[in-house]
Image (cartoon, rainbow, N blue to C red; front, side, top):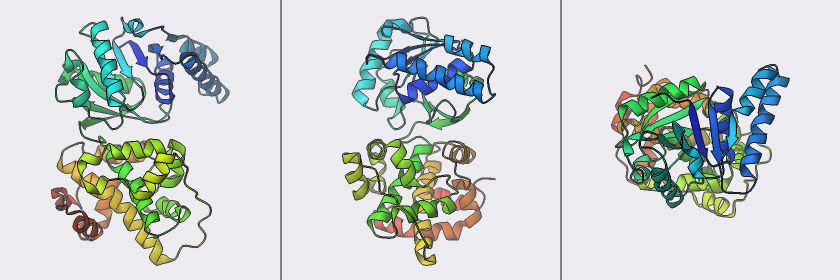
Length: 365
């Protein structure tokens, strides 16, 4: 089955971004949202994006006009009938998504592929609310979906092989870099990105450095284009806390830091300010805490075969803009140094050393 017509449920930031990407790459898009004016705003946003691409010489005027014309509003979920694929992009609430999939299952033919854009809920749990669950999978886009090249293609327990292969081809046809993932809390990228931000807040809570110092060190430690506090302020502390809390089943290391709870529940931005000169000892302590936040989750996820090492590094480079991706960075540091960095946390949280620690030195090769 080929994919030519795509439905999107949810015209928020992610739904708008996905629609914009698909329209540009020749796909007919139907978009629905029950909030008044949301779909109209999404279509206007897409057309505005195309107009800016014309101004920058990246699209021809005729291409921009055709792309905008491919995105159409529908008045209800029954408007998704006739789509080859329907992507859900609503708020990260399990009951909301589950109810939506039950409704779509009643409306859509058994052959229509259904995908969730969830970033943190388990695909397998949602899949149980879909008739013919073999057609259901995760397609986790990263913001801004108009331009961010990465999509995690997530297999639920019942997802058919042919559906995964079709989704990988679909992503490539839309200019994306698909990462094949096993279903797990946080999938591949949020599995380490959320703990990385959480360790940054723990370091702040414990007085290891200011937010500005931690952000400055992160640019060296993982080669981040922007530090964790700057990024959390963009994506909103409330949303980041919600994503961290969804990793709770993975164990106490993944529990949100006290400061993360305070800022997240109030949805209050972190005050960053200026870093100034950072003493070398403080720089080193901050670096190791940020490395811990990345290394331990990646090694545990490798044990679980969530994704391949190259995919973790591709996601870090392309979705998060880390120029020092985790597997390559661990290989650079060596097994003994990585073990030393992990050891305090293993003791503190009562965690066994990941078996994949033995692969350090050759993980990314």
